[in-house]
Figure 1 (tube, rainbow, N blue to C red):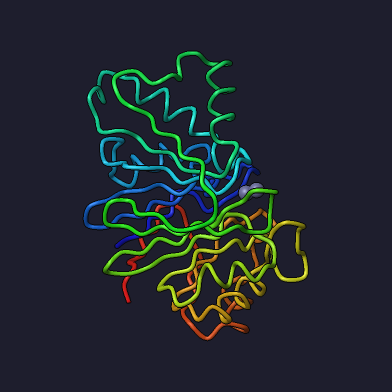
Figure 2 (cartoon, helix red, strand yellow):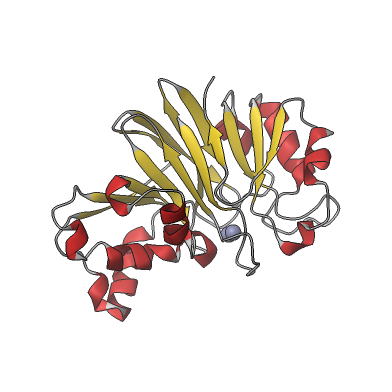
Length: 250
Ligand SMILES: [Zn+2]
Ligand SMILES: [Zn+2]
């Protein structure tokens, strides 16, 4: 499996980091986890097209994690994609309402030429082709989810936005790669988010092999966030950059 970072940034516009988006590919399946604004452009830059995409998993409904959902639904109406396989979008309860309200505002988001499947998730496990996905409630908004995605050849956990919680450890337990919110440098913690040191503490407790720090606010510029994490985590630390490719393997 492979992970591509589509966006390692936040709602604050900066030149080099788009808002949240991640691509996970296995032998048979391609899923995007979150699709913040610009994720579709990054997808194209990563050499993938919408025909490749099987599903979108949303961690929560802050716009830096899902605003490109509207752009995706509009794009999929193009004759380019007519007859494609169904697009499946997964998220916490509220997904149906979000898409309904978006479609009230923008009637041209309603599906044409393909089927849209919206799936509201409760915490638990489900199969997605050759992937096994586990949705875990994470402390951030009232209904934030983290996702653990596993196949026969590896496992990855993605925190979404996250504050300190035991569920984060459960999410990442024993994974090959753990992508975790590290929004601001140690000592400058924001409510609802983690720092590199706190991400590392959760990763260490979870026994993950590789910790990928991401979701960097501009405050992180000029700080050695990898060193902050390495003080509390014995595994490999990666500092996410947009379009970075990270292999997922045991
Ligand atoms: Zn965010
Ligand atoms: Zn958020």
